Amino acid sequence: MADRPPIIYLNNAATTWPKPPEVLEAVRQSLALPVFGSGRTTGSQGEDYITLAREALASLLAADPPEHVVFTPNATDSLNILIQGFLAGSEADCRVLTTELDHNSVLRPLHELARQGRIRLTVLPFEDGTVHPDTVKAAVTPDTRLMVTAHGSNVLGSVQDVTRIGEVLHDHGIYFIVDGAQTAGHIPVDLRALPVDAYVFTGHKGLFGIPGTGGFYVRDPEAVLPVRYGGTGTESSSLFHPREMPERFESGTHNYPGLAALAAGANYIASVGVEKISEKAERQAALLIEELKNEPNITVYNEHPALPIVSFNIRGMENDDVGFILARAYGIVARTGLHCAPLVHRAIDDGIGSVRLSLSWFTTDEECRVAARAVREIAHHADSSVCSS
Amino acid sequence: MKEYLLDAPVTAEFFAYLGNFGKVEALQNIGEGFYKFEKADWFSIKGLSGDTTVEVRFKKEVMDLTADFLYLLFSAYREGAVDLTLSKQREQAVGRRVRERLYGP
Image (tube, rainbow over all chains, first blue to last red; front, side, top):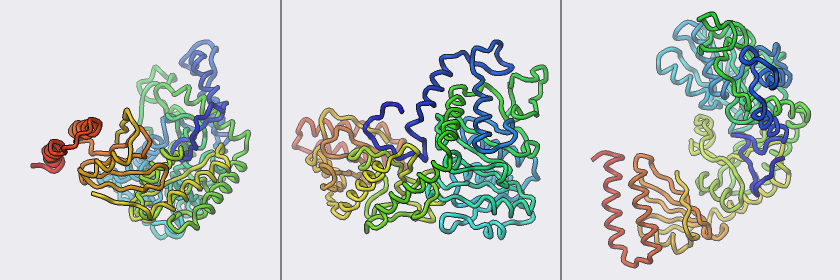
């Protein structure tokens, strides 16, 4: 592990920190060696980090074949490519389903398309942190062509039953894009078994990569038209973009250090075991919630998360003030506000936002206890506010 | 939002002084005291007593006016100005420009 300043970092649902030493070393090495890209470089002094990362991700997510794993700068870019690319091949004015649980990376592209009159959008409500497959079934109309939704909620830490939802959708021939930004690396994901058409990941969260990497797995590339064109290092005599995978969706120079980090992160997770990571996360989130939920001034919004995310507010205090005090008085890094998921917050806290503590494999039980003690201490004093003007 | 690094730790007295210009809320039992100053529809300052950093939030459209006014507020306090008349006049003048810029004349 890199040297750690004296902070307790509980903002891992945004970006994980610290990174495994293997990740730091991979980035260092990738920058120390000359860049090597098949078709773009002669000689072989460098590592082919693109292929290494593709194979590592394919292995971790059981994504077959590896060439159907596509790299992009982040999950948002992946979602835009998939949404726009799928709709480019669909009839205009079709219906698209999403949910209140979703992040703006899903909501904004879809709302923008709805505003342009290119789609009709239905946003499904959730109950107990998840959207029930029956709710999806009831929302399906003859013109529904696509559903895009988060696998895991970045506010509630709940995991959607994408197996049953996918079955409902596929019964009606509806394309299913799943945003796995909060689940890749956190829970076992078997894309051979899951009935999803495309699964999006980001590098810098649970996969322990660095910011600037993400991507997606697409089962049938023909279902999504490419919306970016450019240099690929292949078929360069043609003035048209190749349709083969993965070049179909990848153009321009790759983020070599980022992909080196992503490969190392995915391999690190595989060496620990994603089941073990998932079990620890669930146990620690429960530990944290147990320490907070009985405090009268604290409202915990998710008592049984599957992901290591705990969202709460302290009565009488703005969540932003709680975050400020945690950071400045206790050295605890949290995230406050709407977490780019405004519709979840409208449903759980009238849209005021919350304080979110999110853990990683490297979070210790003691850090959870210290954080819980700090939150309880703040909550104890929340009633003693003195006002003057 | 901007963080201001000050040349001395903030104190309860500093926030009491800010109370002349807006609302101050305090949680005195948290650390050495958590304070929040709010000037409705313009800007807010929060900080912990004993800390040399305060956090200032404002609408970015009025960043320049806010920075000027903050400089005046902070320097008047540092110089121990007991007469608030000048600062209050400046507050009214800058406040008017802020409102005009945010909401129109």
